Image 1 (cartoon, helix red, strand yellow):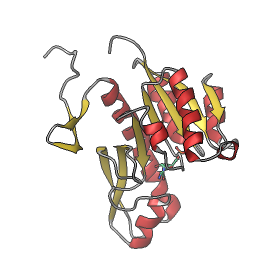
Image 2: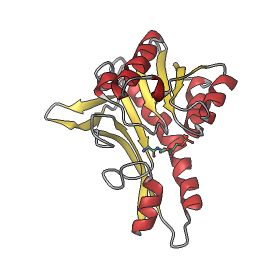
Image 3: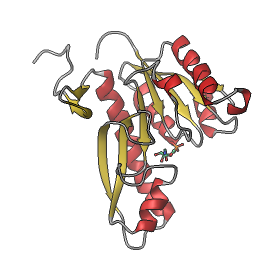
Length: 215
Ligand code: GAR
């Protein structure tokens, strides 16, 4: 990849193992992609420590410091813009983002979900799939729209559920897939290969080559 660095703003609420995979595979790797800032709604999110350990700016925006969700998201969007972020990545960010942020980054906010959407949306995709008894679940990376886990799907990968799986054993296999699929989706977007179908704006298309690449 040539040209300027593609800058990520990563939002986390918890452990940040997916942030770690972005740091190792993208930020510290050969791709011209860097994590410009990590933002959390929780001061105790371990993802903040992972960011600092990698020398990446980390900031906390406590929801209680703002009048409402819109004010909170406006402040986060201001920070992301100030850092020159090209793509906002929700990686275990457990809040619904409002139009106050989405309108500032149109088609430039993506989310990682631990199930095959539209099945099992919400905050407990792994537990819900296991409790339902489906034999196959998986991982989804999608653009964020104003609904909950409803935006256009970029990549999905299936994970089989074993009859003796526990939440812990299934979560381990889901996370292994996430750590590969999310960086892959980001690389495709950074290469300009991901678009929306002109005749169906909720359907993602992936170009075979980046627009600048010679055939
Ligand atoms: C991931 O499994 C991600 O799919 C999930 O939170 C976990 C965060 O893990 N996100 C959601 O459930 C969003 N609805 P991490 O903090 O170790 O990256």
